Image (cartoon, rainbow, N blue to C red; front, side, top):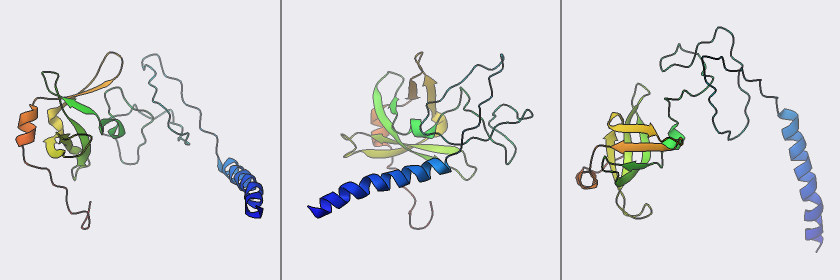
Length: 173
């Protein structure tokens, strides 16, 4: 009984101290610049607030090739988030589900070289991994903004493709 009473007293105190510490360390986010009439506003869903450096008047629009040390201020309409691609269903040109993206492999140049697609199986069990060139995937957004990934292949062709093998994680990633 005493331990329950002590826990009931200690827990709110610990939460209050933790909240006060977190509050004291939080910084106000920088105000975002208003979009110019030539640039439509693009909004990304917020996951957690984080301080963002405010762009200067000399910052250029985000581009695929930027100078070292440059910062991007937003995602362009034709850019894709890896966190949204992994797990996406992959369809073929006949609108048949042929697998899902399990992983993205980066080349030494920092660009995505391959997508690892899980084919077959049920709920991830018995699934075969196949590596396809990332450039073979067509990435589109439906009218409502939903992502759509298409690969010009068949489920049979993927099931007959060689198994994808990851590099030994003990050596390097």
